[in-house]
Length: 164
Image (tube, rainbow, N blue to C red; front, side, top):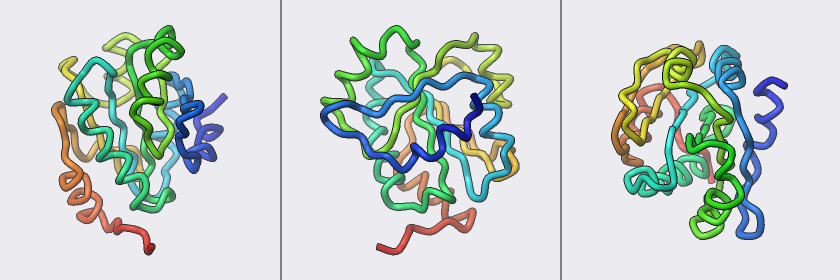
C-alpha cells in the first residue's frame, strides 16, 4: 500500500467517539515526500508523554482547519510504537481531540527515520520538518514551534489561509 491511500482521509475530522489514527510506515512517508505535491508537507514527530509535543498539537489542529488541504499536507506522526494505539493513543485523543488525523509510525530505527526524512535528528521531541513540493527539506525544528512560526513559513511560500 502506498501513502496516497491515506490522502483522502486527510479531510476526516477526529471525533470524541473513535479517534482517527492511521498506521504509517517509513516507505509510505518516503513515497509521500517524493510525490511532488503542490504546496508544503509538514511532518511533526511527537509522543503523548512529551509536554512540549502535546502543547503544540493545538497549533497544528488550527493550521489544519485554516489552510487549504491541497497546499498544506500535514502529518502528525506519533512515534511511540503501534502497541500503544488502543491503551494510550486512543484515550489520549479522546481527551485531547484534534480536527485532523493522527498517524502512528509502525517501526523504524533512528537511522532509518533519518534517511527517509533526509536529515539528522537528535532524538529530542518534538520535531517538525517542512518540505517543499519536490520533497526538499526547507526547515527543521527540534523544539516546540508556535502557530505563528508555521504561519510565517506558509506565507513565505505563498500559502495563505483559505477563505472562510
